[in-house]
Image 1 (cartoon, one colour):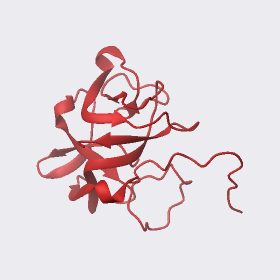
Image 2 (cartoon, rainbow, N blue to C red):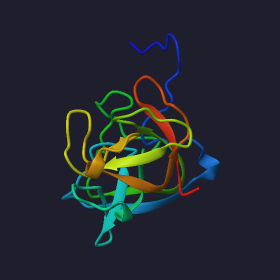
Image 3 (cartoon, rainbow, N blue to C red):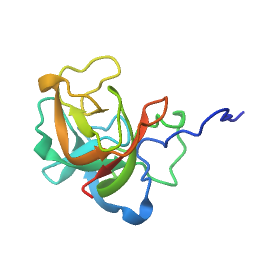
Image 4 (cartoon, one colour):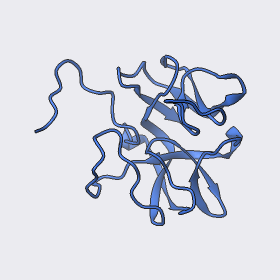
Length: 163
């Protein structure tokens, strides 16, 4: 059985590039010691390999966002929650463009600041997760990124990065 959309289409799927013609995407080799938990989250590069943002990282380490590949190898995860399957292969990093991400806290608004959690992980607020509200020293501003809309009921929202 498939899913039925009864009232409103989702804003998108985290990690999907929402405006292909405006995107700059570069390949990056995954660091197998630091697996990504999901797509559409900030990426940093260490010793030539890409890793998710970690606890205590500064905003300046963020080089882009992890892109969901298409077509993908089959996954047992439900739509919108897929976990990157490979840990030693090459992944795609959005360096400039528009992407759907998962907002974990706050109410995003068009032109609103994008924050990334770098400390004090909590339920629904993972390290490296995107948020629409500052949480003191627990979040950093993702330079060059802004929200493009209010998102949907599931927290999926479009952001622009380095445009």
